[in-house]
Length: 193
Image 1 (cartoon, rainbow, N blue to C red):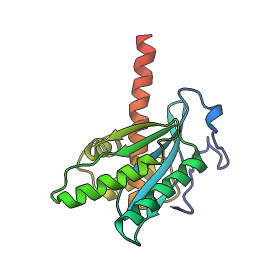
Image 2 (cartoon, one colour):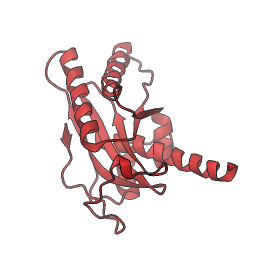
Image 3 (tube, one colour):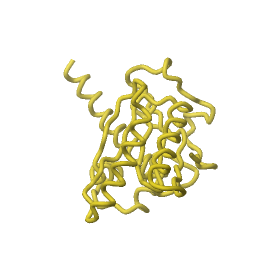
Image 4 (cartoon, helix red, strand yellow):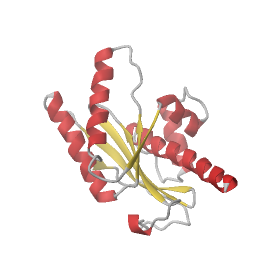
């Protein structure tokens, strides 16, 4: 996998060296790995949620361009395994498969998604999935948002020094969609007792 260089959280409240280890995190503080699956380019984004406020950790792209399809799935599996080992997420948020006009494309996307998810099966990581329109609506406010709009909002919401690539921005958007929903669930828990 290839993390994107030069993207930094410019928020004054978070230092660049501030890393949260799993054992230091309470129920409300979590590390989330967002995944935007694809058979050739799989985006990933890692955010920390501390006191219901998300902050950027890293993002990038898994390129699986060479070899036959099973070899490309192996690249996705191994890369996601490496990301999980390095960043130790508590949550995986992944985009669900949507219906393509081309059934073959939908099947390949489903296989790429399964390869990414299977990297977490031997660990205690909760998995949440979100529909593409749900993610776009949570980040931009409309389910028909463009990739440019997603990149702009990710950069703005996380106060980043530059925009992540399209696939990485989509993965960060998935993680932020989880963050938004968990924030509301935490508020409801407080109200309900």
